[in-house]
Length: 534
Image (cartoon, rainbow, N blue to C red; front, side, top):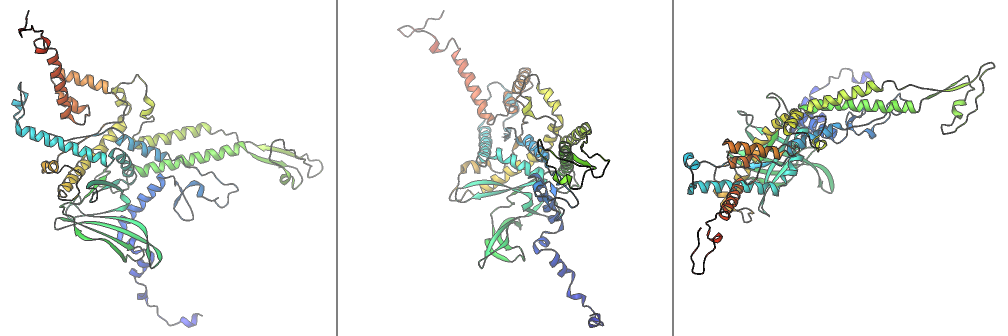
């Protein structure tokens, strides 16, 4: 056989490095690039872990559920496989801490009138100031309307979970031509491929959304990719959407041809987790929590197996005839007859007890690992729902939850800036669609906003309500002249501050009028129209 190939020189050009890559890696994976592919794989792994797949199948190296594991080779029993999924509980609790409160939006009013005139007695706003107050109030109410339409109070809690798992979540701004309404569509970061400019990392010039799906080609169903691309070309946003075959990236269908959107920005907003300036995505506290959760799972599995061996210890059969062990029945009240194997030896049957003497060590170790997860996440060992009783004031709660409060406020910094930017892009999007046949919003209000898009988020902690103490504090500050009524109302988290101020002033004016003894309705008059004043 060897003589047949003697003298033949192999042509190594038949299998070039590119050909090897085509064999080893799919075209889709090559198109993603190494960094993006690794990021998506890590994020998908975190999602699997969150869903309860917390064991690695030795055959495939993939995460699977505990019940899907087979007995390891060389074991006479099937080891317990158990997932506590305390990882999921911590992620959910942190998301609720960040977005569980009743958050508000504030649009600051520009101060047009001179401040000396404002604080003077009998001040009446000028026409320009009233116009600015009305513009800001309408802008604020429009943002609240968008929040209600997009169910943001529920969406933000969901988005906070994805953001913690994948270190980033993305929101697409979409205008529905059929309803005339704006939609905020949150998508996981595993579907998002950003493109940044070379001169500025934060300058987003392209955004691609990739989703796997099935597609029928000549009667056969094949794996396909739905690709939605947003691009900035010469300062204008363009949109294209296509269906590609996954195996070779061949174009199967063009859903939306490359066309301009009439916007000078990309209708995409990212919400990243920024812990370090030089940190890449996927390296946040999630990886540390996974390691600790793996240890918890292992401790629980060992404890369950140990308990099994303690409850059902090994039975030792000594000096009995061959086959005695096979004849024994494991059941309540079972009886077995044992004869000596040789003359002069007495058979013996007994249980080999272990004693379960490591219980205290297990409890200490379990408590340490669980405490480490709380230290990493910043969560206290108790949850706010367990504090529905009297005896703790606001200062005590601040001390008790100091770590998670500071952690949450740090996350709010990123959430606040990016939500304000989302609001600004949404208004600019609506301003570009005021000529649409169907438009569900007040066009004069949209136009009146102009280019003043400033808005702020008012985040609220999900602690037990200490409103009484806050009201008492604001009352003291207002009485001492350190705070105005409007400022106190804003700090209380009222949505429409200007309307509430006007309502309070109206009630006070009516009460003064009712208590005025010289008011015409409060003075009795004679038949000739004269009044008697004592």
